[in-house]
Length: 253
Image (cartoon, rainbow, N blue to C red; front, side, top):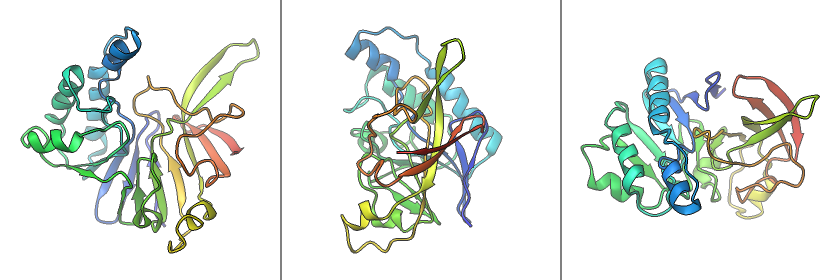
């Protein structure tokens, strides 16, 4: 049976494929603070060093064979420049394992940056947006319909949604938390769109965003709209977990 093991208190998981042991994250959004400043006029202190150290610490602690990023490594939709490019270059100069990036909707021309800087981005490969399969696990970003190859997996992992919950206490205080969302994929949204799919009843895991500053889809707020074109119709029921592993219950969408 295929397994995915979330790392406690972290938006990351270990996924063994039989051939490799993967560290998987989603939605790094390098350059987020710079984009907020230029696009929204919002001044945020850069957390680039914190993001980098958190990821490097996870790599050192878990010692994976490969890092898989489920899209949106970048935040700007075009070509990376300035602070964003600098953040990526500094990060990948220190990443010492092969990297597979599933191209997300924010990743623009990331493959051109990788190809033009082979020494900095050595070992980085960029997949097409519809994803790929490694062993029995399919990986996609989630902004497009996954490929047939991904859907033939036993387990499908996506990002893109940045799932969150809003928690309230007895005196009216509230906070929002990143969460994991997982459940059984329903076949009809996929088979009705592509009747040649050999449906394999995969489980779906929606990763929390690695970048804690990003907004996201509220799981426990009524009438919230999902971002992925196949959600929530393909996930009518899902289990929700906080990053520390606390089970928040079953949600119906």
